[in-house]
Amino acid sequence: MSPATNAPHPGGGQLRSKVQRDGGFTLDARTAATVDAGLAVCAEPALGLEFDWDRWQDDLVRAWLDDRRRWIVEAATNPLHLGGWLDGGGCVHLDVVRVFPGERLGDARALARRHGQRAIFDLTRRVLISLEGR
Image (tube, rainbow, N blue to C red; front, side, top):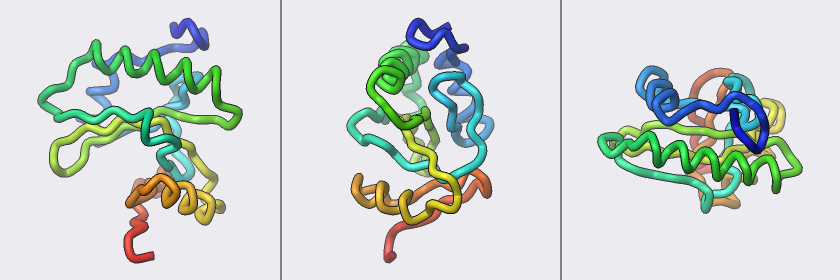
């Protein structure tokens, strides 16, 4: 259980399995439930963690999760989530993400552009929406 939320807390090994099996994940930071609908956008790039897949360390990921879940619960007024994926170059990306309803694509794009993001992930359709050239 997470001390900040009293919710189930996935460990680094569980997240590694999700990235390996599914290519990524988006989890509700308060409940650890999978978020599978909406548009996921990085909420704050400075809170992310990136490393090479072959350098995955469960303890490092667990510490990142503990710190980010506390920040999400204590500092955020809008629901934030934990997201992670493996890019084509073998780099793992872990982020604090905001999930917008599908009908708020314009708001999702605006936040992504504000943070210099190149894409949004559509959780419902499981596809990237590129922002380049738009």
